[in-house]
Image (cartoon, rainbow, N blue to C red; front, side, top):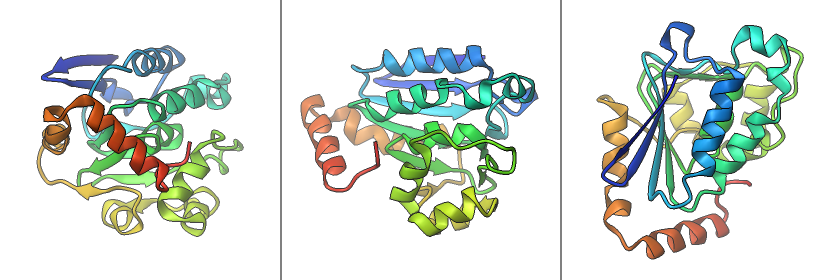
Length: 208
């Protein structure tokens, strides 16, 4: 249910459980963690989903059994944030719940026009994963973060772009768009690309 393709320097990771809105089981999360932790030498990592939803977050049954508060979510987002290569969340559709963490940990987020963004963790009786509010606030500010996490608001793609939650809306294939964005990084000296990422993060980049 997690597919990995290496293509011309890009590692494309696809959540492939469209019949369940790409909801994540513990086994799938463990696999995503292993992929991220093993991608230290990958110039570009692209995360996407199959079908019309990026991910609905935790599988409902497993969430009730404890997955909603598992440290696997934090392990995954931390592994992605620590990668020296360029990381892109190619959001093929709606992003919900705990799946926000992996997208927030990426360097860039692009999305299709119909994507929606929400994180109803408080409504469900849980706290968000520890780093998610800080990463979200670094992108969109504390008030808008509270609008999503405490106000329970569902944010459409155009509003997410205006907020800074995503970086671009793409009309065509979102993975192809991500690969196009990554082209300069793929063609650059790897040491220079990594140094530029470090400089960007050090100058007020994403929260870690």
